[in-house]
Length: 126
Image (cartoon, rainbow, N blue to C red):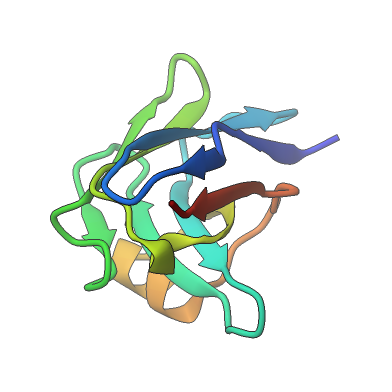
C-alpha cells in the first residue's frame, strides 16, 4: 500500500519544539517533492512547507518562516519538519504528501499531492 506515516506530534508548551517525521511506505520518495500541510478545526488546509526532490529548494508559509525547517533523507525515505518557537496558532493536524513535476511554491500554495497520510496532531498549549 502506498502511503505516508506521519509521527512526532504531541502536546507542547508555547515556545517549545517538536520534530515531525514523514515516512513513505510502498514507494520511493526520490522523484517527488514533499510537502507538509496542516489543518486546524474549522479552518482550511494550509501548505506549511515544501521541499524539492533533491532537497535543494524549499518553501515556507509566511506564518512559519524562520521557525520551521524542512529536510529530507532519501536514503531513509523520510522527510522531517523541525518546528521551533511553537505558538498556539500552530495547533493542527499535520499531514505530508508527495507530488511530482511541480515547484515547491506551487505545491504548497495549491495544496495538492498524493499519498496523504493519516496525520499527526500537534497541540501547543500551556
